[in-house]
Length: 123
Figure 1 (cartoon, one colour):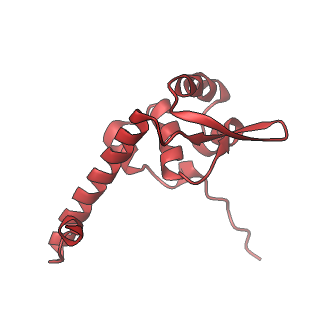
Figure 2 (cartoon, rainbow, N blue to C red):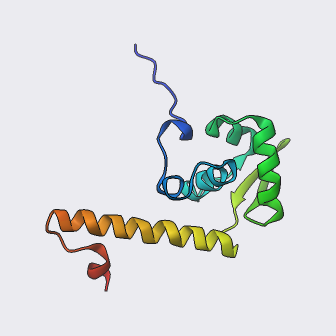
Figure 3 (cartoon, rainbow, N blue to C red):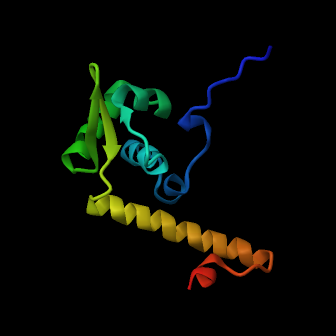
C-alpha cells in the first residue's frame, strides 16, 4: 500500500499575497493565517508548516502579537493557539489587497475566455 505524504503549507507554492509583497518571515506568517482564516495554530505548528527556524518565527511572531495582527484564541494543554485578528485594520487592508488582486486576475482570465468578469456579474 502506498503511503501518502503529508502536504504542508510550505509545499503548496506561493500565495497571491506572497507573490505580490515578498517572502519576508512576517508576511509568510500573516499569509498562513489569511489563507486559513478558520483555523488556529500553535507556534510549534507554524514552525513546521512554514519550514522556518523557531528563532525566526518567535522573533517575528512577537512583533505580530504586539501589533495585534494575531491573538490568542485558546489554550490546549500547554499549547497556546493563535488566530488572525480580523478586526485589526492592517489585517483588513491586507485581506482587501488580496481580494482586489484576485478579482482583477479573475477578470483578466475571464476576458480571455469571453466570459463576463466577476466584478460585472456582482454589480
